[in-house]
Length: 329
Image 1 (cartoon, rainbow, N blue to C red):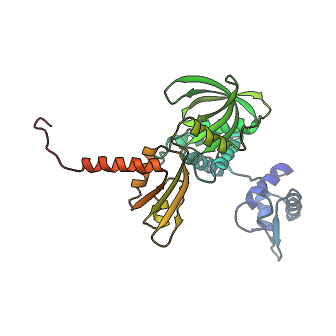
Image 2 (cartoon, rainbow, N blue to C red):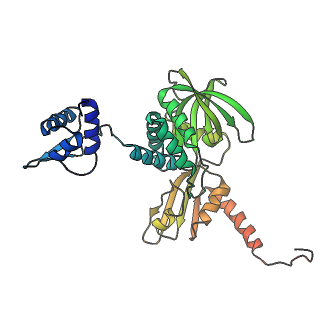
Image 3 (cartoon, rainbow, N blue to C red):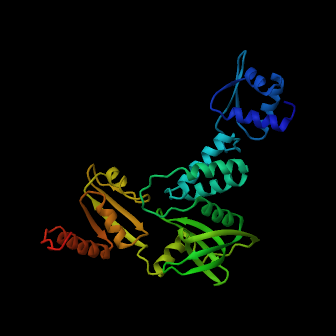
């Protein structure tokens, strides 16, 4: 192989496999001399790749962990596997890594050849994930378009369905994607309304990057997450409640039965306490707490305490057997 750049990429791909490569085997794979392999190893080191050499008659090379992650070289199968995995998780927010996952997916799909994008889409269409049903499923393509325009500071057009079903067309300057654990929201500046807005991403349709660049505006508050929290509160949603609940069960038991982002603190081996910002309705919170299948006490918010009392009374009445009407089927 006489093409030095292509040879370096092939060498890097081999070294990124977690094993030690004898110099002779690398020379055979690349169809060059061992001396050329040594020179190519030096070139990779100059580019920042931490290649470790072992002494001996045969000698070997291994790529080790460095201070920074250099670019990866993936073969077709590896690229498809990573893209499918990111797509599978993108539609359902994963606590702590959701925004990074979407950014990584946007970068990867931007450089995938068309033949690989087709394979990824085919695999995704043939796969049905088993999810908890706690949040709306978002098409990965929607998330990657929104993430790409926010990162690239590019104006975005899309259709939007409001809570009452009203359809509209929007032109915005996207700022950030924010995940609440169950839902994705887009924080953006609405050009036509000349104001900041938040959009539920599961209500967004046909997003289109216009190609028009914009200079980022300053948010009215410090962060997109804080702006979203205030926006939901102003809209009258029950989505910004401070939840404080004690469970008579181990923290691991409760965490496994609650949505992502609800992490209880142990109060011993058989008790725990959950404190969290709950971005959901009273009805949903009441049902989720009951589904934990453990005794619990709600300390906050008071409106949830009242709702649980009403719900408990209603369920108690429903559990009392009554007379069956004569004309019932």
